[in-house]
Length: 318
Image 1: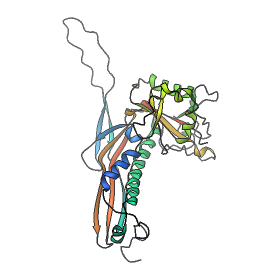
Image 2: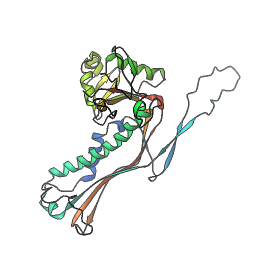
Image 3: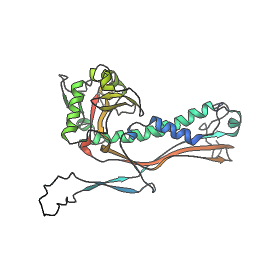
Image 4: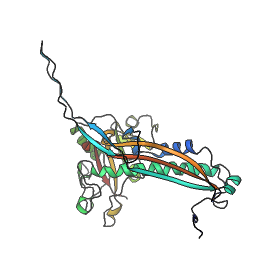
């Protein structure tokens, strides 16, 4: 192969007979927003800087009210806040090369495929990075193995009336139940996690279990049924429920437990997404290939803000 050749990683008149590279940017951003699930449910922070920057997010502790006596000064809350350091260290791109002959002979139908695919690919990566952090919630270990695999995640107990800790070296994953959901909610309540801005993100297999729960299917618990945000399939106990195929796999080594899927119940302040640069699209003519190189990319960082503001749970894959 000649120096600088790109092999088969480009679009030709044969592989893309219906493609015109126009209106890329708006369509990629639309595809990104349409496919982003977790990224829309966490604290989002815009940051003007560069990749490699570290931002410091204040993490104040809760104060308390003080009785006010007549003719006395107010009591000033002590400054005991800590901070969370979050690095802008992730840069992902999606690129495609469109040769001139393809552009001349193309239609715009396939253009929409590639803009949707670019948005989907970038959104999937952001969601995956955020999902990875859910293993650390409740003081867990990210990337743990054996007994330390999702060791702070929960699953429905054997009686189906509550929850028990997930065992990372021999799966005890069970289908989610109404009682288990209430027990998970109670853990957030006991941690003084605000009631608003909570969400429950489930793998597709879990949706079938929810359909068997009256609290989920009854209209007064679902509301209008409008999918206001990406992936929303309803509500339960006032909490928005979202479905995502990007929910993690527990990744145990022993079959069939290596297909157990993880969901999460969390407040938006459990995790943070810092966007140094949202989705950017640009093109450049490459004379050596007689075609246009199109690239969409994004620079961001993810981190944990409040460890007790979310809780992971595990369900079997079948």
